[in-house]
Structures are given as C-alpha cells and as structure tokens.
Length: 151
Image 1 (tube, rainbow, N blue to C red):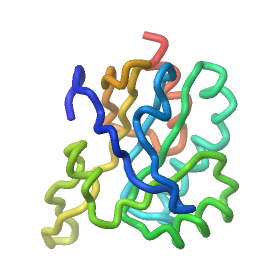
Image 2: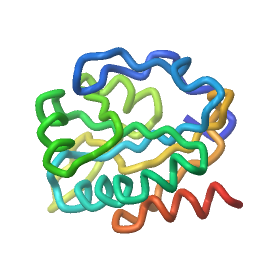
Image 3: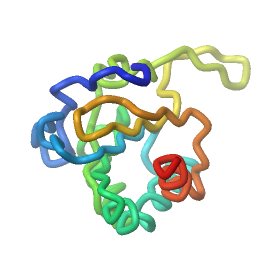
C-alpha cells in the first residue's frame, strides 16, 4: 500500500466478529495502525497513547482501527485491560497485513521470521492513503498523527 492507493473494501472482523468495511468510513478520515502483538511493551504503549488521544483524534475527524495477528479473544482481553475505545481487527491469516504490505521478513537475535512491521496509515474521506508512518513514536502516537495530519 502506497500513498495514493485506495484501501481494500473488506478490512476484516473486529473482536466481536463484525465485518469491517471501508464503506463504513465513507466521508470520514480513518487511521489504521498495524502492530505486532497484544500486551507487549511497545504495542501497549502505542495503544494507550491512541486511547488517551482518542478524543483529540475524533475531534479532528478521525475514526481509528488497530490491526494485529492476534485472535479476537486476545483483542477482547487487551482492549478491556487498557480501556481501548476503538475496534481491533483480528487478522489471524495476515491477509490485511499483506494487502497493506506490512507483513515482512524481520530479524531479531540472529533469527529471521515473518512478522508485522509497525506501521500507521492515514486515509482520507475517499478511502485513499494520504500518509504512512513507518517510524512510529509508540509513547506519543496520537500527537504524532495529529501533527502529521495538520501538515
């Protein structure tokens, strides 16, 4: 997925099993953030930053979706534990990760594996990607998005 691309119509299912479609956000700006795993330090800091800044993001006209490979059950626990006010998509088959190009080879401790590269996409009212954040400030991500969206 690149700047100028239209996002896919089917985005996946949220933690409650509801299908999420791009058309659900027609006429609204949308943030889709991809993160590696529920309840890990960086992912928790990022989710909490977005939860704390959610009111400001909404006031700026944004809807928000989080996406990881975790199961719906994991998302339910993660969202409840951290009072997340936005939906999390359970992308267990990585189809959405792959569509957005964030499912890539990673290396850690001399090991190579496939995983989600932490990335945030800002999408306009027509479903077109306008910004991609690949250097995510996990502790202050809401402000990072708002600053970029104001440019």
